[in-house]
Length: 116
Length: 205
Image (cartoon, rainbow over all chains, first blue to last red):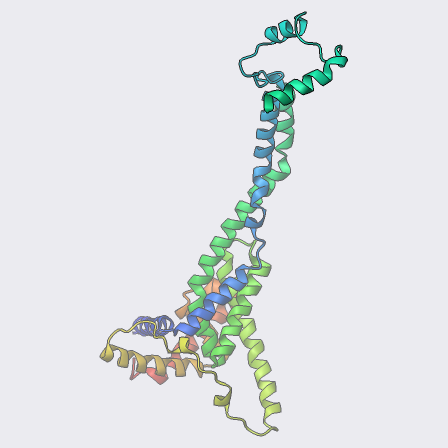
């Protein structure tokens, strides 16, 4: 008798709690969130966990760059090797603009003739 | 390369490892608290509502209790939360009842104001939770109304013992902890509450 009475009252109260209107349920949810918001937020510091990995990666890249020596690929001059440069510079028949300063007017006249 | 390994080893400091572990603990606690609070919030509201007979006051009492639990007892063992939470809620309800008694004495000297003037219409209040069917609903409506009136009229300690034991399902020890009294007192209050309720509801239930 007592047990069935207790069980019945419990069922009725449970039913009542389950029937809470939307406003009350919404305010209870808000209250819960407000309470939980007091806890420090770990998401705020998420980036700090990536700092060691980032630093290690940066150091690895730096190490690779240092150990592989100076850059091997200075841009190649189009179709001209350093050996050909040396031949041109040492060619005795090449015009010497600096030494033949007297002929400078002649070269300017010749250039004008070509353009016209 | 040796220096790189050494530096990397130095850089992954125990502080950061500890912080990551603390963050994980915090997230676990937050999830557990969320689950716990959502599991008790409706019953806690009903308990506060029956004790205070006012929805807004009941919501305030529940919110204050949630805040207090998270603020002061989040680090306690999970199985301690339930009695602690109901202890806080019981204290909050008692404080509000006392304050209301004092306010009632003061207000008795002032002109009466219609309480309905303060009520704002809220569309959310009109949303029903679930509908078990008209006949069953009517029967349950009646049972809920009669039972809640009878429970609300119980002396505070009997009401507390009845709601915590019968409705919230705390055992005698947890109820004693929540009520701040001995297990013997809990048994006495609960027995008297059942007697009172049976005397009032015997024919209906």
